[in-house]
Image 1 (tube, rainbow, N blue to C red):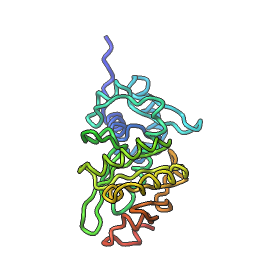
Image 2: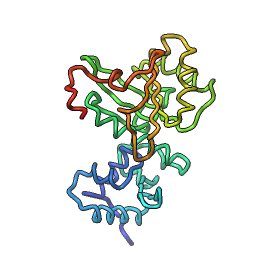
Image 3: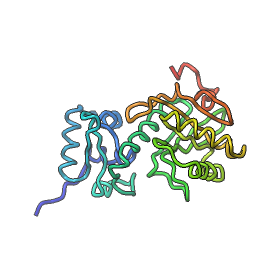
Image 4: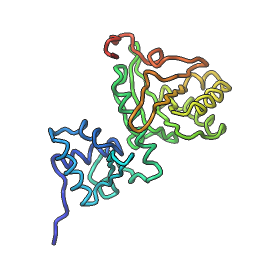
Length: 242
């Protein structure tokens, strides 16, 4: 009787990386891998995990291989206790991962996690980033909005974040200029305590492979602000951003 394949070493590392990031491209996997493995060797190991039904892959743009854990693979990691992602959420989850990975390169941010690792009652952000500014720690719930929601639904989300104490701010991120304008209007119509809790960010380049937060438009407390104005820790050297 055949013995089930038991991942170890690089195989186990791959599974845990996917457990943290939910879905990732091969370049990202190579960057996060804790072993010194050549790309083609890493790709071979990914294919082995696929053959054992532990991960699935999809080609986006007909060339970029993206991988994620199956329900079978999820049983082998403690980083994700949820379920295999569905096809209709794939692009959204990839964009969320890209947003979080890029934000973690910003010197004022210290830690972050994807949605499946956030445990908060009644609020379900796409991701969370933690930072420090002028000796004050804060946390930001990240909401990636690729399609515009109804005014009633969006305003209710704004209210929930303003009432909840789990996050200092909620940042709604989109690559749609029309959505950005609409969400700004919704927020401007709400009470100051709600406006104080919500940031809206527009980056037209946002995709599964790009997030240029430094060149983004940010809206906070009724005004357009730069990303650095909102988040740069004055104790951090400016040259760290270059």
